[in-house]
Length: 354
Ligand SMILES: NC(=O)c1ccc[n+]([C@@H]2O[C@H](COP(=O)([O-])OP(=O)(O)OC[C@H]3O[C@@H](n4cnc5c(N)ncnc54)[C@H](O)[C@@H]3O)[C@@H](O)[C@H]2O)c1
Image 1 (cartoon, rainbow, N blue to C red):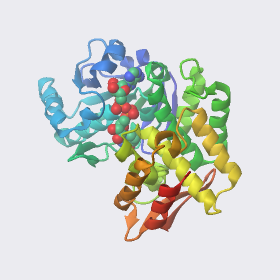
Image 2 (image 1 turned 90 degrees about the vertical axis):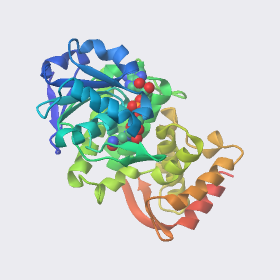
Image 3 (image 1 turned 30 degrees about the vertical axis):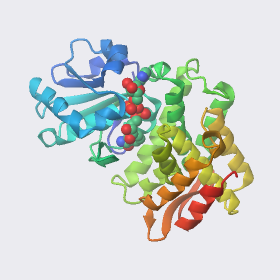
Image 4 (image 1 turned 45 degrees about the vertical axis):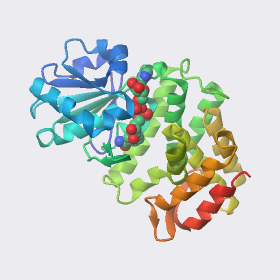
């Protein structure tokens, strides 16, 4: 197992098999935090280690789930010399990262992400979060993982839509970073993709690792420039204005909404003469070849979703007065924040593709 690179936030990243992780840990002072489904699949790689299970998926990120997690710290006598190992997707790392931050004013935190979304995005960058009052991630802190163990083999047990959701984040990073990154993804889609998505069950492990590595390097480089999201890190919200609105009214998976958000933002940019048609087509083709939706028609033939989503654009966190600080993709590797009247985005969303 070779350390690949050092993130500028001092997270050390290792691509390895889960079976190699145990010997990197202090078994007397590491508590594995996971959910029942993931632990049933991969818990056997951590024999003898104390563990605690939290609810699956978004339920892990509720304040109601926190006391049981903190009780398990008392039960295992977790003190400041201990480290939590989050074994799972973004829900596990968000919840365990927050608990690591608040327990005794901060204990060690490692992550072994098991979804593509968590490997490319959620488990790195230090943000964690719990949901409250119906709002996502409104309770949270910054607590960087010291170590990240990525076993891309664990991705083979994901459902296709979960893998595709993670691809939306990887593609977002490719668009933001530029040609080399984006064309690597195009090449993967060409070789291993079909209309239902990337064939991640048979795609070689080194290809998956490279795809994840590119995303991680990119995200960490942005985080290093703006660890607390005051400026540059906002670029990572590409596709979120339209995406969040559609996600809220449809309940579609986050990655699908981000993909649609990116497709819509790109179409908007092209319609305004700000993006070349060739770039638009490359983005749409890559998203679809990774099994992601690119048109509202596919998810909203009656038009009621787009109407409801359009109203929600008023709630965009990036709106200041009548203007949205919108992430406008102008090309591969060229995304700018521009102030766009919210009414203009609303009419675009209402009318798009009709
Ligand atoms: N902190 C951040 O910077 C950040 C960034 C993006 C997303 N997030 C958060 O991440 C969460 C979503 O995370 P996610 O998409 O990784 O999913 P998840 O953690 O919600 O997991 C979804 C389901 O997949 C299962 N699962 C996980 N790994 C598996 C595997 N290898 N094989 C089979 N099943 C597996 C889990 O048991 C769960 O049932 C959201 O709450 C989102 O807000 C956080």
